[in-house]
Image (cartoon, rainbow, N blue to C red):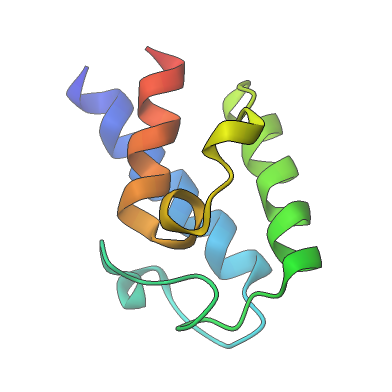
Length: 86
């Protein structure tokens, strides 16, 4: 199971770096990094990013999990993804 968590972490960081409106590296993303306030994602970029996340991990993030608290912070989003792929 640990390998899955490492893969989710790394793959999620790579998606964020690819989609981020600001220039960052995977190492710049911390557990409490806020995609909106720290990285400048707007609502359209967030929706596009979440579609990529769903495709990448083969999951669906239900509407009830689309709060800024869950999808806005890297650590919370990672936990949400990990819970769906196990």
